[in-house]
Amino acid sequence: MKIGGRHFRTIWLKPGNECVVQLIDQRFLPHRFVIEEIRTVEQMATAIREMHVRGAGLIGASAGFGMYLSAIEGAARDSVDEHLVHAAAQLKATRPTAVNLSWAVERQLKNIAEEKTADGKVALALRTARLIADEDVEQCRMIGQHGLKLIEQIAEKKVGKPVNVLTHCNAGWLAFVDYGSATSPIYAAHDSGLPVHVWVAETRPRNQGSKLTAWELSEHGVPHTVIADSAAGHLMQRGEVDLVIIGTDRTTYTGDVANKIGTYLKALAAKDNNVPFYVALPSSSFDWSMRDGLKEIPIEERSAEEIKHADGWWDGQQVEVRIAPEGSLAANYGFDVTPRHLVTGLITERGVCEANEKSIFSLFPEHGP
Ligand code: MRU
Image: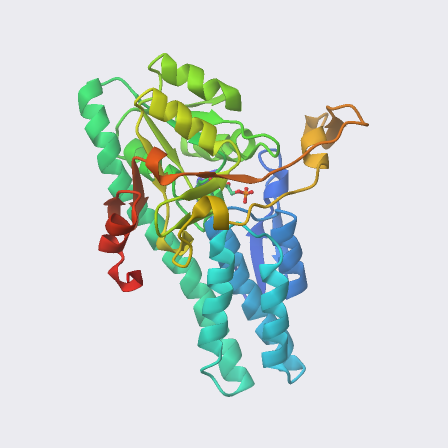
């Protein structure tokens, strides 16, 4: 996607030095555009854990590049395999909910095992890391094409009035390598000339909606309005939401959807108001081993400090302020699970399906029973 007219991905290899990974450090957006250089798997693990990079697809791509950096380090010390096993555990421990992380790490381990020499392992790790990133881009682009049809159907009925899409958190291009999942159909609609307007839920406590999604949409010129998380139900009751599209960090093969905390409440409100509730995801965000999302999906709990504080931009600096009494306890659940019966459909790179086992396996038969 474009920033100031120039095309960027969220992660790439440094031109002229392929031993360095460059990424957009999202902690400073929307106020400052900072590119970070990552040279070791240790640095990559920190970038994922501390959310310099975040979002399911980008976490997966970052882990893929992290494994490549570990292969380089291992080759220099004549111990590639030991390094990779250690790196795999280190990367997987950074964030528990997005399944793309373990998916990318396992894919690297499986591929690299087939090479015998250290140089061969490094070269294959590089190819795989690139492939993971490139596939993410193409899958998100296709999600846009399939989701566009849903927006077109609504637009036909609205005869010239904007289609109002509500989204939560950031499942935009910043959460992937390019395009995004939930935002990809929105960009496709906007680019094809359809009038579209986005309600952007701010997404406390880290505000990925008001900071990242709003910034992305602004850069692309898509009309949008930031709302408090708790305003979504009210807007739906007033008929001001035509469609909800959200992303996911892990979806079971039965259609239960883990996404940023607060998603479940939006799904309940959508059900009560007959608003279609779609989840956009590349196949790398399916967990093909999990049946029951509520019981099985690990939910990340982050520091209470994220709840008790807020940060923003003041007088040319990023500042943090406390917003809760110092002595109060706070609990910070990062994700919730929306059960499949509240989901209208899943928008994948292969098309739209229902949130149930039969329909999901009809699109992805290679993962079926
Ligand atoms: O904690 P984050 O920012 O990594 O959470 C990820 C998200 O932004 C959302 O849950 C998103 O909707 C799904 S990731 C494509």
